Amino acid sequence: MFDSELLHAYLISAARNGESVTYSQALASQGYAFTRPKMRALCTLLCDIDALGRSRDEPELAVLVVRQSDGLPGQGWWTSGGGDNYQGPWVGPKARRHVQRLQERAFTYWQSR
Image (cartoon, rainbow, N blue to C red; front, top):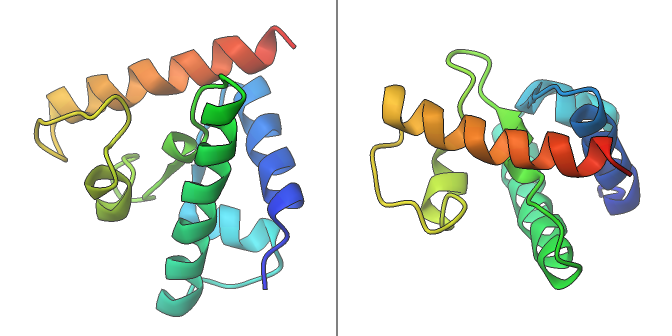
């Protein structure tokens, strides 16, 4: 269904530009409109991309994919560990600081390559 290499490249480009992307934008990069089933498939692929990145000592990229409403990743990202096994709230200032720290890590890493 999805092209993992295309999505990986899309997320690296976003990181190099210092930008997050919405779930809808990530789906559109694959030629799809937002639907719940497509969203679930996208989240599975994001986990796979991050697993591959970990094996290469690269920072996670799934943290760049956020909800349009509040600029934070969705529940699936948090329940899968939320980067660095974060244990705090999934919304609010503490969550935002955590996400921004991980996004900055990705931006710095990919902008230097």
